[in-house]
Image 1: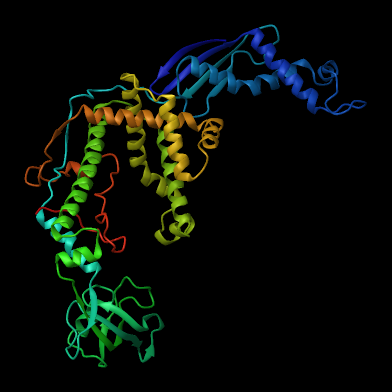
Image 2: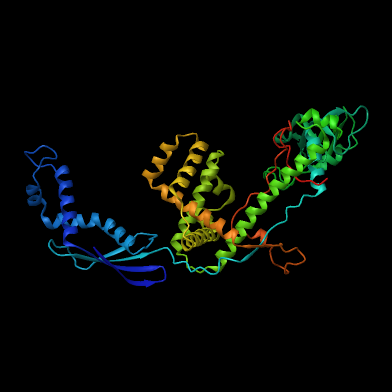
Length: 478
């Protein structure tokens, strides 16, 4: 087969392809064998009809037309590979002759949209801001306070009245025009005053109440409530049944030894500092990597085809739909609630989709320019990690990925990860601009990175026996 690139206009290319007589004959013979298996002729068992009778019955011309039609996809794919093209949609095919003929080469033209050529700008020695990772003493104090809060006790307050921060057990009810409002009734409801679990106006009224006291007062409901309640003024009743205060444990070596594997308060603070430092460093490295890649992508030139951007946006919407379904929701319900159609959602996703596609193509271009490779051993190691995470056999998963063709996608992602690491290693870290330094109206660079970066991991120090969320704040200095 002979293939030439006859025209290129941006991302649209036109190929001229000539299929040899031998290849045309192979396609004809393949189609004839298929028909011999499928066509039923009187007097012959299924699949046993002679090829000669099939040809008499259907004619060579008709068989050849079908053979060409069914082989065109493979011929085009081979031509695209030979010219190192990456088509993004179906080609438009035009035969040189109206009907193919046996014994003569078959010529056709193919017009198709392809992935754009990436023109890399400078991708080494650029600058990107990197956040400092110093840990302040106040950060450790905040973490310690959070841990104390996790181990706090609720104790009855005795005879005193409700104060801010108290935990109150109460019966709540509301009436509108003398009729009870069912959705605003609760018995033995526990809330912390100032915590926002009940209406703010109601919290204000509760302050100063005593145990067993009942109070009714007018309350205007928020506009965010359902239509039958929004904005209405009701008679709201609170019956205080119990008042407790939160008592924090003392910051002593004894307390530390009781709730952790550490013997002293100093050891615990040092462990907290270590954890916070590690989390900050990881987050800082991730953000720096993302900003370094963004700087390189901003330097590159390419013209993304609309079809590629839309395809990526559609995949993002599909991911969103799967996320909703995993939580018991659906895209249909989401559209009803928000009034946003699927098409509008796709349009909303397009800017992010375009950015994601561009970043991926730029990373692939850097990997190619630097000769980066994903070795078989590296691929197998990643497959093993995936298998372990999914609790499946590594060989079974590897075979499945190869059979489905997804192993190549995995290799491409690994190359892009390597390219991102290469870019970060060759980018100069500078101090981020402060709000004073930034130009008026401009966004801080840390907030405009092209990649999503996870926040500082919020983990409790090793050995702390508090609930899992005991590390929501993080950081220290002694």
